[in-house]
Image (cartoon, rainbow, N blue to C red; front, side, top):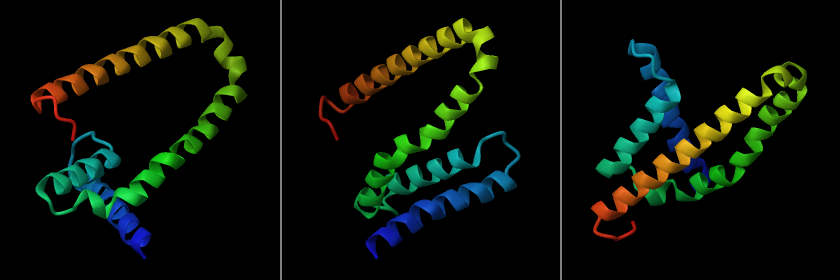
Length: 119
């Protein structure tokens, strides 16, 4: 029953994000609205981390499986991709390096801001 409750909270926030996406005229994906709602609930204490931790960890563990169809799609359309393979790889590597760098810098900033304490 614990998993059903945790999944219900997570999917409820996603549903609320879908509703906000329909109501607000901003070009923001519904998933982002749901994530922000969940973040606000976690920060205000309406939802405790312990209320979501088990199911959230399971979802993170299952996430790599979700990338298999995208990889198969890329392999399936490799004929069209061949002509732009070099720019595709350059963009992929540069964007990956930028994301890793920015993520590392933000993590260091947060750790310094908290006085070196990791939450």
